[in-house]
Amino acid sequence: MQKLSIRHKLVLLFPIMALWVWAFVVEPYFITVTEEIKICSPTWDAKLDGLKVGIWGDIHGRGIPLENLRIGNQAKKLNSMKPDIIFLLGDYITRSFFGESMDEKELSKILSTLKAPYGVYAIMGNHDSYFSRPKIRKMLRAANIDVIENSNRKISTPKGDFYVAAIADPVTSSYSYRAAFKKIPQGAPVIFLTHSHDVIREIPNAASVSFAGHTHGGQVRIPFLGPIATHSIYGRHFSDGLIQYENRLIYVNIGTGMSRYPVRFLCPPTITLAKIYKGNQSESVPSPKTIK
Image 1 (cartoon, helix red, strand yellow):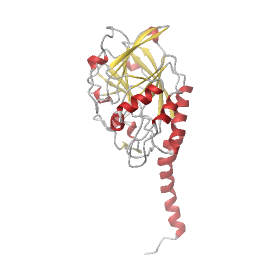
Image 2: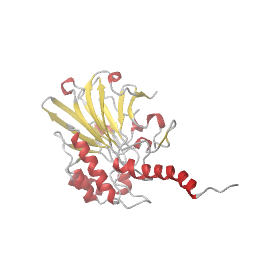
Image 3: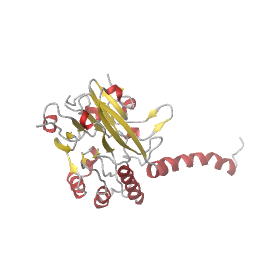
Image 4: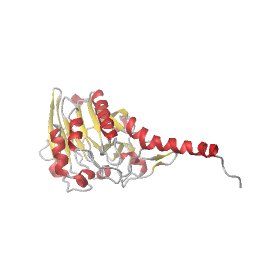
């Protein structure tokens, strides 16, 4: 059998190296997609129509030089979308075999640049428990970010009031819907936050719309096949986007970071601006995928 020449070996090796550079360097660190979506809920208040909600999930800061650049640019992109309110959906710092965790003070400094008229709010994720929940809370509060767990906040605007309710991470912590919705008036518009959308069947009907992260959209997607793994009981089809179960509506953000393996392929870091309106779920754009 004739041996391949060095030239032919290089020709075969080049596309492999190009894919490696794309998946481990270019896509995760130098590309951030910004998307705008429209969410319609029959229990939203029409006076608040058009509320702009900035969603940033799964930052997963690591202790390597490119992280400051990546996360700093993503914060700038979110600010440039001019949200009325910002929600951070958990998993801020990651420890792995592929690098140390990001310095909390460095991440806090970047997150402190986030600006929105009605504030910046955060929930916890499973990796925050693996790292240190007290340290993550301290880091977020140093950035003037309000951490919500099994509780809620009343947000007052010139057009009316709404509430933000959130549970603790359902993967690693004890969570309580009763505590999250405590003292919220019946019929009030409510935005609900949870790190994982696996709880969609449990979410109280009082929630007008919900937001979640955790799946990373699969992080690595194979053409014609989709995500390799989503860490969700609902599998590949519900790894991201707008999802409906009966009258419950939840948006799953792809997020911007990486857990376990520092790679993204055909699943670029994504920051979302959601505009909320009163209306039927079917009027939402994109149309919701239905869990039966």
